[in-house]
Image (cartoon, rainbow, N blue to C red):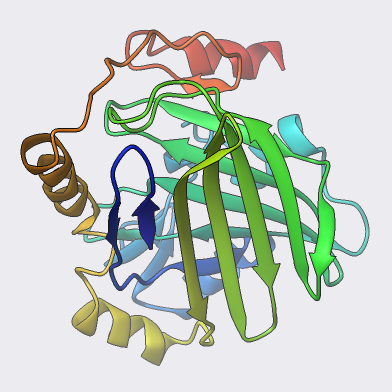
Length: 256
């Protein structure tokens, strides 16, 4: 769900299918499911190079740069849509560090349509309800051409055994600018469910994210005449991939 409140109202929602992978289980899932591959060519697959610095380094190892390594009793969940027939575009991926049932840290990995990638590292989490945590971070990355670089993101994480809600809202000058969230009911990651997803839900996310983004942008620009802002040159060290500096991520990995 995506709802813009100012300077003009605009809201839409789409069905999506997203996955919650325990990073330590990816290899085993790949071995036991013919439809899914981890760093292998399968109809549905996850590749380390699609995340964070974009390098052939296990995601959990790349994450250690931001939230440290896992300790005893901890696990890390990747909330993402895998590649479907080799294609995917995830506007945001969430890396959730869990200690038992408690969320202790999170990394929101944001991809824009310009080919840039940025991370918001969230270690100061506040519990606000049953299995619900919130965090805040100043906006530091260009995503939509219909928003400038000002404002603060308010993150919400509600992580339950049978359901999940992940929200990112934008506030500016004490004003609610934008609400976005994904939520869903959980289903076991079985071979039957993977095959069902492959045949029945290919357009939920993997193949349809970019056309949906372009369509909604056209409405905002041509119909609602919303002001646009040019993509600024990224300056934040948390921008891991800059389309104008393709070796930037590699340099940061070496320095780390």
